Image (cartoon, rainbow, N blue to C red; front, side, top):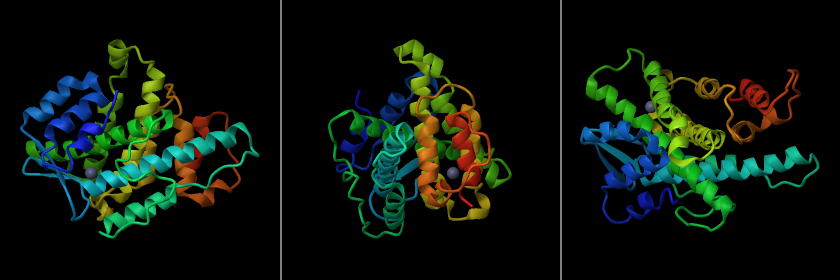
Length: 294
Ligand SMILES: [Zn+2]
C-alpha cells in the first residue's frame, strides 16, 4: 500500500490537495472513516503552499501545508528511523560499528528551512520525494506519511476549537488537547483496524506511536506555531503524555525508537550513568526522557 505519493504527486501542479489529504488520513487510519467524514464535511480545504514561513495552520477553513513543513517532517522521519536501526544494532551487540546519529543534522537542516535558507541536506537522507525501493525505505515512507497525518490532525483540532468557539482558556491546554486529538485519531481504535485488516495490533500501535512522536517533535519544536513558548507546553511533558497513553500496551519498536530519538536529540544524556533500575525498553525510554530537553 502506498501511503503518501498522492500527497506528493499533487504538489507541483495545483495548490489544492484536499482530496489527497483526505486519502492520506484515510490510509493512515481507515477505521476513523466517520471522524474523517465529519472533519471534511465542514468544507475544509487543504492547500500546499511554497515559500514563506513553514507554518502549518488553518485559517478561513483552509489548511495551509507549506512544502517546507513536509520537507522538515521528511528529514525527521528519515533521521529518526536511521538512528533507530543503529540503536538496534548496538542493543544486539555493544561493540557493533554504527553510523553516526543523523537526527541533529536533520534538525539543523529543518531549522534552516524554517528560516527560509537553503539547508545543508544531510548526506544520509535522500532528497525530498526521492522514492527508494526496499523495506527500510517503505518503513520510512509510512513513518513520514503518518507523521504528516499526525501534524495535520493536530492542526485540524485547532481549527475545530476555532470553528466551535470552544477553545480551552489556557493556550497550553489547547496545545495538549490538539496533541491528544491527533493521538486519539491514530491510536484510539486500533482494534477496529485489526478487524478490518488483520494486521497485528502491537505492530500497528508501534508504527502509529512512532509517527505520533515524530509529528509531535515537529509541531513542538520546529513549527513556528511554537515560537511563543509561554503558550506552549514543554516538549518533555508532551512526549510524557504520549508515553503514558501507550503505557504498557504492546507497541512494537516504539520504546527503542523513542529512546534512540531522545538520545540522538540529547547526546549528553547518552553517556550519563543510569541509577534507576531499568528492566524494560519502556523504562529505558522513560529514564532517557526524564534526563532530556533540559
Ligand atoms: Zn498546536
